[in-house]
Length: 103
Image 1 (cartoon, one colour):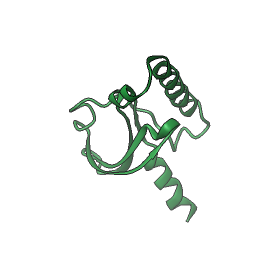
Image 2: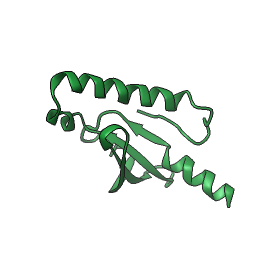
Image 3: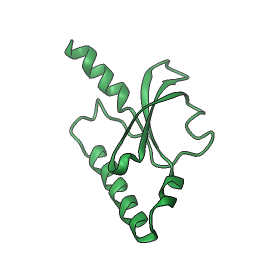
Image 4: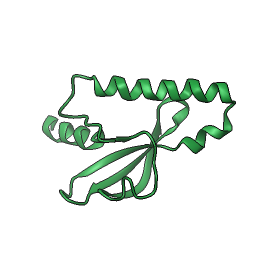
């Protein structure tokens, strides 16, 4: 059971993207429906996806900067700083085989 769980975690956290532009992620992945949201103010959209080359099921974390337009300018900078810190902390984690940040 743990092996299945670790594979699921590895697949789920395999991809993270700070900004989403058309074609950037779709080049390597088939993006499915949104399965969850997370992070500060739930700004990360989590989608199921499949790697086109290896057929591995993963989760892609997408942050769209346009969602920040509903916040005041000074709050936008604070939120962006928090999101960058989140990505930095995840990349420094001790779970290098479970979590891989590609973009």
